[in-house]
Length: 354
Image (cartoon, rainbow, N blue to C red):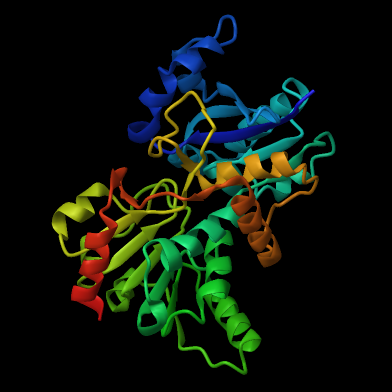
């Protein structure tokens, strides 16, 4: 029997996902007897969205929980129970050995650590953020490509799982690093840790709890768990580039309309050649979210470990190696789903930043 995995995720927002997911043919085929699409939304239920094969080696399911990010934040205990029910279904009914956590299913379970502590759960869990970090580093240093050595880099959501790992990996690649978040004590702890680790290599490093300080940043990476856009046009420096890893995104399309000098790049989208999910995942055709792709790779590798909670940088490197092995690469840069002409982006960088 093929190894089995499942990816459990919720809706990002009503506008982005509800109709696209709710009326997809694979989901309709998997509705249980007596279950209606209206019940899925009204009661925040879960169901199978799609079932697919990967390279004739493993088979996977995507399970959708019909709660938006905002609903999960407003009803955390209820949302956590819905995640637990979906995970138990994946393990007990679908026999999934590996389970990935998408969107807010990770945040609501403390990066998956709460699930690992449940005595009846035997599957191996990943929040997928390790490969999201690896894909982001690939995106901003190789794909775009950006010369960060003479630029101020800001990370919004700096003490989160993804933000902290990116801070540690990128702190020496930029001329100045600005860490931004709402919790001052967590920012200070991260700053002190980075300075202690790099004592022999001084860092130009600052922290802030004010988004207005983004006006000092040439490049901004956003990785917060905010349920909606938080980066406003007036927050950004002229010619800034924003690489938005967050889902739901921390930026909105209106940002590009009001600031023609600014460029937003959809973060951590990955090419998945040879894999047909049978659905519109919400990423450009032929691509997927990095967190989903990490789940696929863990199942392909039969890596029987949990990858939850704080990110291990050695595992970030491991996922990057897996990606090379299976031909998964950072997708062509897009801006809210529309392809970006990389030649124009590089030319634009010269105009603004050199």
